[in-house]
Image (spheres, rainbow, N blue to C red):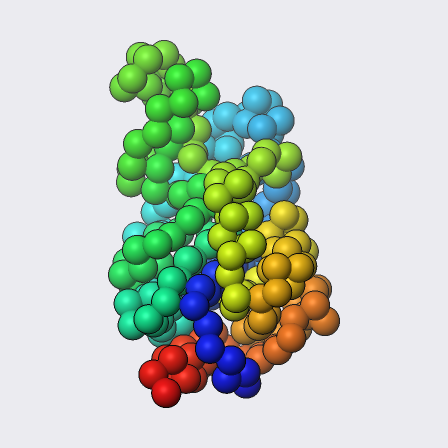
Length: 239
């Protein structure tokens, strides 16, 4: 493990960090896309064709979210943010709220949030934990049929990309946790960080698609390897 002193850490998290909490991943053989066609439930075109089907899918996912809790990896990331003497920025591809539940403060949801909804007409956003259907009325513009989950679908631009790019340019350590390396633009963050001179580390259950781009790779369960790596960073920071 590198013992280089760091001043700014950017962490990217993906589905693998939440898997041990019971949140289904997307691309595994038994993942969400093995059961559902993403073109039907996770694209603007699918929503236009059958909004009731899409909203039923997200109502189901919202209900499942209520039963999950942060695991040791989420807690370790929060601890790093709280105790590291420099800056820690957490960028997540996950739409769950497990990082928040673990106490993380500097969090960027690049793919939106399952517990929020968005109005396509007036861009109103609000926290929402209950079911809603295609006839639901926007509390802001009062139109019906315009509300959708506030999540980024395939074919849409992820949120906060300019802000994320600025953080990657100024980071001296980039850590990727639980990501497959298949989904862009997040899969390209390691290359961006390396161009800026950052040391890059992959913490993943198994080698990702882009594992060869990292200076260090550590593979195993997130609940084991993430706390151990955080311990290493905090110990090195106090030397």
